[in-house]
Length: 126
Image (cartoon, rainbow, N blue to C red; front, top):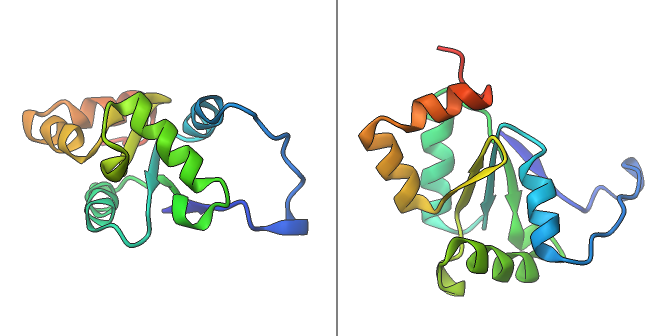
C-alpha cells in the first residue's frame, strides 16, 4: 500500500495548487491504478484497504485526516459520490474512474465485476 501525504516538506518538489477540490481529486485518482480516499480511524476504510491488499493489489491511499486540505476534499468526495458528508469515505477509484464507497466495492466483489476492473486497470495480473 502506498500512502500519499502532503507533509513531505522539502523532500518533494512543490506541486502546483489546484483550486477546485474536485479537480484535485480527479488528478489524485489518476495517479495510480487503484486509489483509496480514506480516514485513518475509519473501520470501513480499513476494511476496504484490507480487501484490496488481500487480493494482491497495492492501492495508493490518501488519508484525508493527514492532509491539511482533507476536510474540503472530503466534502468534494461526498458531492461526487452522492454520499452524506459524514459517510464520504472510503471512496475508491480504479483506473481513474469512480467505483464508489464500500457498498459498491463489496457489491462489485460479490458479483464478480471487481477482478475484471482491476485487471483492466493493470492493478491485478492473475
